[in-house]
Length: 212
Image (cartoon, rainbow, N blue to C red; front, side, top):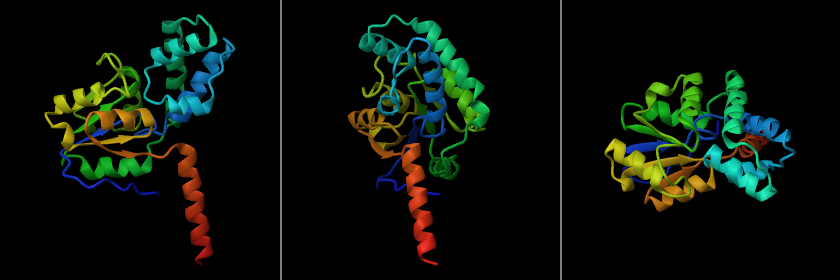
């Protein structure tokens, strides 16, 4: 397992993104997106999907409509995309290097999830991983007016936990989330994308074999 290097600081709360940070769910979300959007011949490159990590589903559909001159029904696509994602939940696993810090910090500092996904989606993911009871609050799409990279979601989580922003540590996989944390005056640690974790594991394995 690749271990996370946390920044120096006296942190009194941990704020976690969910998809791609706690849950290794981004590949499952992308599969659901590809299937739903293919019916509209709507391109959604994997690189762009990860770049938009943390963006609410309705905003993604709306932006794709604008980009491609489409009129995909936002509420219907959101519902169908979520259904497809839920059907794959049994395949989901936690991100090991983040799970390590959840287990080590639970009961010592309060935790919050700060996500661009819906409450239902986040609860389903955390329930599938048996982690829902670890978090004091969930800040999800619908709780705030401005999503990441705006600082509002993280500031709302800090306020709910009663912890000053400068004493919060954010765990995030997407640049939008890192930017939101920085704008909120919070330290952050970036979680590698699935392909980056795979490449790092291969490198560690190669080094281990070479040292024999």
